[in-house]
Image (cartoon, rainbow, N blue to C red; front, top):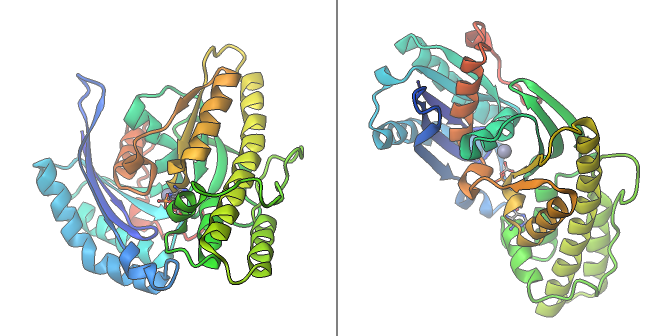
Length: 343
Ligand code: KG4
Ligand code: ZN
């Protein structure tokens, strides 16, 4: 089975062919083409929806062609088409889903309208062959969630952010400190030479029985600290970044620990359950190290799919399509599916 995946929900135009050979029973990524629009949005310090939608229109046909060519597959040899149908920026979703509808309709193949988060949720099965159930920490520019992944279509959200997403908090802190976009990697770089103890930033919701995340108070504390010492020296910036990163890591650890304990209680028979991390923020070394230590302390295995599969890509969308087809969950009404900015 070969599935064409299309992803256009944010600022990456992506297409991929994933194959599942039932004899081998291990999926194979035949191509995974991702065009990032970072350069187009950098001047604005964030993703501009109108620019993103136009860039998807211009790029998508070429990206799909490149994905087919790299996989050595023609459209006729594709067995199904899967596209992100939400959540995300609606302009991009329309471009991706309509293109998928057109291809599936012209080639008379099944169409799958995929939830972007389902793509992230199932990636660890594509990359690591992970068995259900497992715990997922999704930390990206748009999402901060802890999910119990029970089966295809069985997802239970245990925690979400009540304000900013974690990547968004990194990006906003970077902007306050005049660091370039995207902020996450630049905050991490600056933090490396900073003092994490110079500023005692708040640890939002730490110790609270409520499972959720909150980052907006922390962001405000960073803004106040930064404006109190204008003009900022390079060392000030480094110290703020290090202190911010320490606060974030600490908060995240508290929230994740709760979920590990709950998962253990729900699945007492599982010897070594897995915690999977996904999303762009998963690239952060301080956060990764903390998660590794936490997993080791609680007898969990720590699974981090390769970076290209952790950030937005179309291989995860193609794979979610394959999982749905295998589970007999193809949606015959997918051609009528209207993209959902919230889902
Ligand atoms: O998953 P992703 O590539 O895209 C979506 O949000 O859909 O995540 C991007 C986010 C950005 O907010 C970026 O600043 C953050 O991930 N990020 C990081 C790091 N690398 C990327 N945040 C913290 N530390 C990093 N090293
Ligand atoms: Zn994503």
